[in-house]
Amino acid sequence: MVKKEDILEALKGVIDPEIGIDVVSLGLVYGVDVSEDGDVNVKMTMTFMGCPLTAMITEDAKYAIQAVKDVKSVNVEIVWDPPWTPDMIDPELRAKLGI
Image (tube, helix red, strand yellow):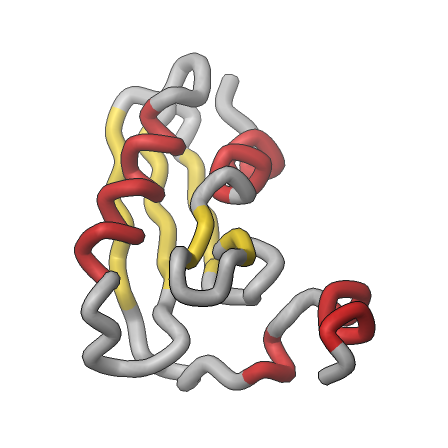
């Protein structure tokens, strides 16, 4: 059975190329729902609306999730509410970055 933790771990391999940090640590992943059948729905955002890398990062996320054992289908929805802010970055990473 697919677990939310497995999906988040897979998404840690998806790097925002402009920042060089994974989407989970950046706080871009707002939610992960996994059905008993292995259908995965992810809600995530980008650092700003109109980001030219939205399509690429979304496809990278789908690819990473599909690689998780027992995943049957993947849906990644980009949402803009709430808007992303640097406060959403993992606190430990924020400290390392001096934010």
